[in-house]
Image (tube, rainbow, N blue to C red; front, side, top):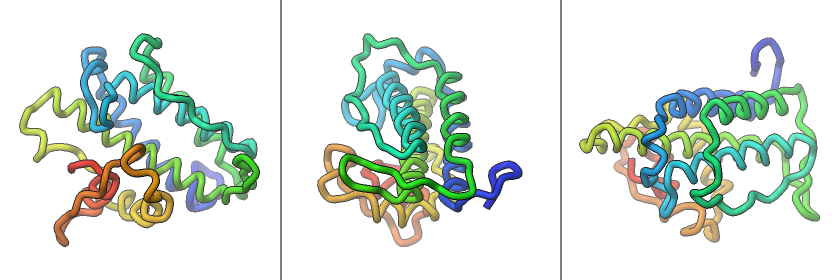
Length: 200
């Protein structure tokens, strides 16, 4: 796979697609959306954006070979990260991992496969992109259930097995809600969102 003219591992190409899709969702955010509740229980959009900024920082730092635990979500009084700041950090994240081979990543006393970490970053970025889209859509139209933009099918299809591998039982209900059953004919996007405890 390639990012620009550089050959990179498939996980980095997946990260690029996740960042591109979520970047489009961030571009729809307006100041009056920031106090709205999100699909992340107890979080406003302002708090979600702050969490996304922290996540981008942590995944970028991991490219140096170690993982820094994410801090707790910031209080509403913390200055809101501007969307352009998030977009700049997204570009920096992709740049930090755009290399032909990925380094080993240390987390505490253990080592994590770098490809797994990059794929996990793609998953988190995508699902929070959907959270942003759902929040903004709810502000625009009450009939949002038929309109919420789901992740692209090719991206969601690639992320589904990653979600199944990295989301452990102890992650529920703190990081993710219980999986919501989907019809056999449901799209990959709906299956991904539902597996992570969100109602598509």
